[in-house]
Image (spheres, rainbow, N blue to C red):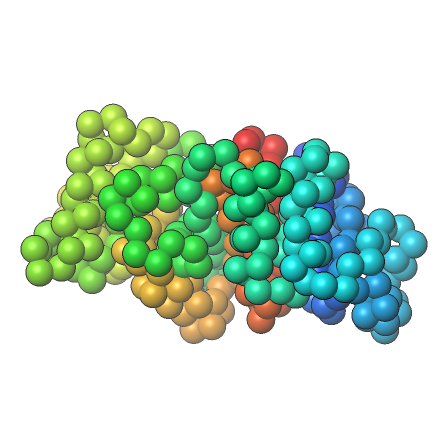
Length: 301
């Protein structure tokens, strides 16, 4: 693992174990990551899903399921509802999305009676470690909010800042990412970025420094920022990269993973507890990283 995720895992060990409900557990990478997290003392899992399928996968992997609570629910929708209800009823500290659609687990989270919402905005927060950089990047939002407005972006920043604080970044530098670093009425994202920065400057966003608009190069590279004459505390030193919309965020996140060979973790913030959520295509390692991150964050919210 890249150093940052080793550190996250070590911190999670000191905090854990947390009880985690796993919705739709019948998946090889899910069971590998959950089993490893259990062995590391990070979580005590409650597995919810198809018992027969889960037992077959576990047998093939050599995983002893007798150590875990396994609740047999064949229907994926019902498994998601039960996993969320388990957290709602305080029988678990956090929930993890297993082998199911993101929309299915989110419907359960958003349920007014047995869900996990408390009036906030949910957003995806990814932690990405790229080998060429000496710091991780927090990328948001690449999975939840399609076209967030100014108020939404303020909430997205607040969610990301909580994750940054959990990672030990006391005053994270937040960059509003656009295609260019200049405000142009022809590019609405730049106008919104400026408005968000003004909200920060007027005291409406706390616990961080917000700047923008920035292009991605002058947000993460001091050399690029100097070359373009940009003088701002965030320029070239960003910790948090706030995408203008879901397309940009998703492409950025996955480009870092596949082109940059980055290691990553992902959780949903804005609910009463963090929701461990990765793509079904994500590796077992990424899923374990996400579990460890969820444990860290669950300790502060």
